[in-house]
Each structure stands twice: as structure tokens, then as C-alpha cells.
Amino acid sequence: MLELASAQVEKGVFELRLEGEAPRWARPVVALGPVRGRLLALGLVLAAASLNLTTVPAAFFFENQWTVSTIHALRMQAMLKWVIALSGLGVWALVFGVRKEELKLVFDKAAAKLLYLHRPQWNLSTPDQGEVGFTDIRKIEVFGPHREPKTPYGYVEIGLFDPLEKREKLFRFQVLSEDQLKIYPANLGRFTGRDPHGDWIDPDSLPIRP
Image (tube, rainbow, N blue to C red; front, side):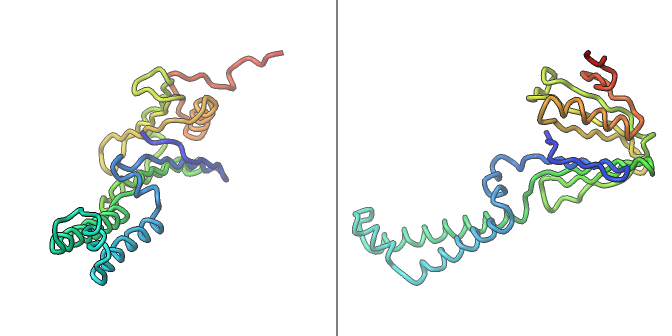
């Protein structure tokens, strides 16, 4: 599930930036970022290429009696070279092919519109983007931490109808604190004019303690 990464309010515009995880098997590489990931991939490819210029690994295998002959030792070095080279190419492919899932929601109060941009985990996938009027927002529903799928502090669902694509869409993100579960549904309600429902009470409706 996507998590609330950041939010800002400026001149009648409420912007939410949400992030998800990369696929589990790709997370170590994606966590490096594009620059460090490319450097790692390049380093592995160069390390593999350098094995064409030396027989030190083969000598090491033979001296430690990991092989029965120098020919076998050279074959092991060749295998090692290809393993390193293919690892480098794999890292390179992950750096360019996989990323964290991202969703950007921009609520423009003056224009009464919601602009959305969803980038999937795969770089080659086409981003899903569009805009809808606040009247096309079907629901803002709040789910507490006890509701399935369970999250530490709960999550929010925004359901809407995209008139251009003529289909329903559902955006879901989890909050990272109890305060966020109170504040963000309230802000969404004030900007869109749609009352949030579910496991939520408007903080402004609570009586002030003496």
C-alpha cells in the first residue's frame, strides 16, 4: 500500500505525494538510487572485464587446491567473470527498469479539480494521469488500524469517476501517525467539499475541554 511521503498547502492548492515500495526482490538495488546503482553496475562490468587481463583468480583457485588442474582453474575464473558481468547487467537493468511506485494528488480549490499522476513500479509502464472535478469524487473513506488490510495507524481511500476514461478509480494510502489520520481527512473534506466517512471524527466537531 502507498504511504504518505509529503504534503503541502499553498494558495488554495493541497498536494499529496504518496510512495510505495519497489518489488521485494529489487529493493536493495532500487534503494541505492539511480546514481549509486549505475556506479555499482559499471563497477561490476569493469571488474569482470579486468579478469581478461589477469590469471590471479585462477592461480588462487589452484594454489588452494579448489581445482585439480590449471585448465580447470582457468575455467572457474571464466565462470566467475561471467557471473560478475551478468550481475552487473542485472543491476543496470533494475536501475533503469524498476522504481518506487509514486502517486501525486493535487487538489485545486479555486478550480474545483483534482489532478492525479500515478507512476507504476515499472519505468516502461505508461504513467496514469488525468484530472477530475470535485463533483466526480465519489467518496473519501477512512479506515482505522483494526480494519483490513491492517496498517499501524489506518488508511484513507479516495474513490472517483474519471469522465474522460469513463471508469471508476480508487486511490488508497496509509497514514503514518494517529494525528495524520485526523488531519488529512479533514483537509481533504475542506478542500473538496466531500465529507469523509468511516473511522473518523472531525476534530473541529469535538467539544473544547475546559
